[in-house]
Amino acid sequence: MPSRMAGPRGVKAAWSGQLLENGPALWRDAWPEPAVDGHKYCRGACLVWSGPEFATGAARLAARAALRVGAGIVTLMGEAAALRIHAAHLSAIMLAEAGGLAAALAEPRLSACVIGPGAGRGEATRAAALAMLGSGRPVVLDADALTSLTPGLPLPGSAVLTPHVGEFEALFPDAPDAPAAARVAGQVVVLKGQRTVIAAPDGRAAINGNAPHWLATAGAGDVLAGMIGGLLAQGMPCFEAACAGVWLHGAAGVAAGPHLTAEDLEPALRQVLVSRVGF
Image (tube, rainbow, N blue to C red; front, side):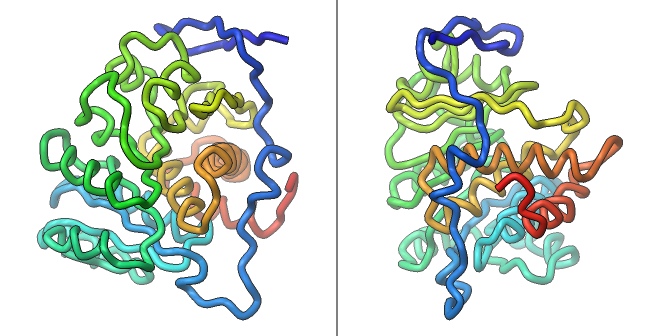
């Protein structure tokens, strides 16, 4: 039966396709279980692009989430001044200077990238995003990466786009909904909102219903971007990784409880992953 989305304001609600309810049944078979005899590179390497010196927090939230969700190794890449800030806050996350992006993308063990959280809008972010897309690795495009791209164009490579409604309307001015945007971009689109919609260019689409309203807080989207990136790094396909990331994000929000801040989501995610309730 055709479904109607309870979409965000400014996005048309009608859609003629089948809208599935997001949940573990959609992605459980693709869930990456670590090998008993594996090592960190078996679990995937994720590269997260950092913002400038006084805008490092968002990328740090994403990097920690990517590591927590199971990526074997996560590297934050940025300018030296930003890395000094990161170094004061992180222990298990690797650090690398932005001038080494080409070499990092040529590293065969790299398996996914995340760019956008706190990255800054403009040509530098756009160039880095396009380089990542051209590397053949799956990329999560969030926040400033989305606003730095040309609206309405198909994107190369393999990606998950995670816009909120304002970013969605700017990037896809002619798309009435997430499934249409996914077809335009040729990529998976996660339209964030009270009922987040995940859509693939092949027509699959799901709506998420487990996220509490108190997840609407600064930095929560950065955590989501990192979670999806960490799942991509472990080999989950883009649609399944996006669906799993969105559902786990909602479950972590429930576990953290009301009055959470974004920093509460990573430890709450561990509770969800350890308990495996629902999946």
